Length: 276
Image 1 (cartoon, rainbow, N blue to C red):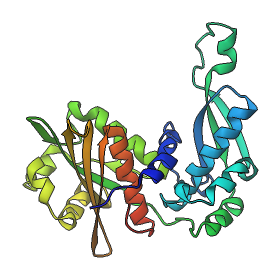
Image 2 (image 1 turned 45 degrees about the vertical axis):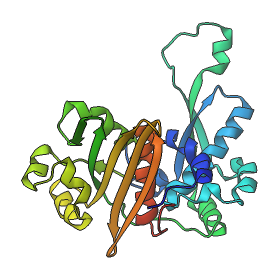
Image 3 (image 1 turned 135 degrees about the horizontal axis):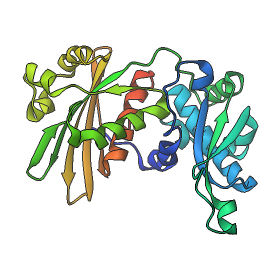
């Protein structure tokens, strides 16, 4: 198994907040070629910094290629990030909340929304050795076995205890214009899959069950808490074109573990190969 490189993780760490509040998965080219981030106020300096983060986000969103932000060519592209923006707007994240003082007037956090045109972004992707991922993005059924101390369970669609994890996974999928769903406990039971069996289940078998969960294919994973790593150890598997891909991340919160899962899936499904 491999893990994402530290350089790539640092470079794309901020992308997780981009589009996190997007109410729907992209269904049109216009939806696909947009991104967002959070900035403090509407200062020019902060806006330019936001443009840089949004450029990283839209390149990954359009291509599915998680390696792009770590490429050395990105430094020069970020320096002129604003030139690629076709339009932008703000939304006050504290809308309806009165200012506490004059300073708060200027520093209130805002969502910065950036819209791009394919004619501007596609050549950038080409210059980085990448391309748009314009085919329909499969809906993934997440089969996840979780273990922390003596507690262990399989994530399912109905358990109220799993709400935060399910919401986190869905939020992780939005920046990549993807969707996830989860099997019910009844479906897992019918297939003879408890959390222990899930760890060793063939992904191709899970692909068949995924269709019963209203998805196109399976994303299989395990999440094990490690006191030594001060976080979760997450292992992920996904099958494509007769090959099963595996990747992992260690010592992270489950929000980041799920972002790594979706980024890896996008990397594979977009034809960009093994997550690293």
